[in-house]
Structure formats: structure tokens, C-alpha cells
Image (cartoon, rainbow, N blue to C red):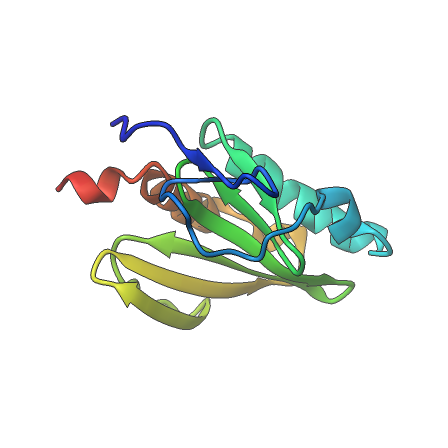
Length: 146
């Protein structure tokens, strides 16, 4: 489903599905986000990013305090990363109650932010892969055509 070209902020050049999207305008990089992180933390981040990239074409959208992953809209993000693990979220079109989700925020009837914590690469399993594949469809905005 092609909903038209993404709008790019004239200042930071970040792409968005909505024109004049509110955001923290700035130029950030994944390298800056990973700077000073342990090898263990970077390995967890890299494995998560590999799983996301396996879903299909993406745009990596680093911000001041996190790294988002988007197609048309951000569908997953790493919100915190340190030696003890990673705090991340996926956006699903439905609310999924699951013991691994630490918090669920419903931001609209078809957009539910599911927060979770990863403390080892082994926790990045088929279950997380399923969430990412489902969230990727939200990133494509497929959930809006129904």
C-alpha cells in the first residue's frame, strides 16, 4: 500500500509519514547512540537490528535518546541500552497481553506501544521475531487500510 511520498523535515531531513510531524529535530547517529556502550550491549543491539532488517526495507531513525526503526512510521525502537540489557518497544495494531511486555500504551485504536526488556541475545527469539514482523506491517501502515 503506497500512501505517497514521505515528508522530510527541512531542518534535520528526517522522513515522516505526516507533513510537519512533531519531533525532536536534530541530526543523530546510531554510532553516537552506541558510543561508550559495552561489547555485550552492542551485540544485543546489533542482533535486534538484524532481526528488524530481516522484516524488509527500513529506515533507521536515531534520535537524541533512542534509535527508531521505520518504514512509513516508526514501528520499533531501542529506548535504552546498557550492560544489563536493552529496553525496546514495538507498535502493534492490536493490544497483546503478554508476560514479557512491561508496559502497553494505547495511543490510538490501531496503535499500541508494547514495551519489553531484553537482557541477553538468547531472549531475541522467535517470539520477538513474530512481534517485529507484525510491527513491520504497522510501520508500512497496512493496518490503516482495514
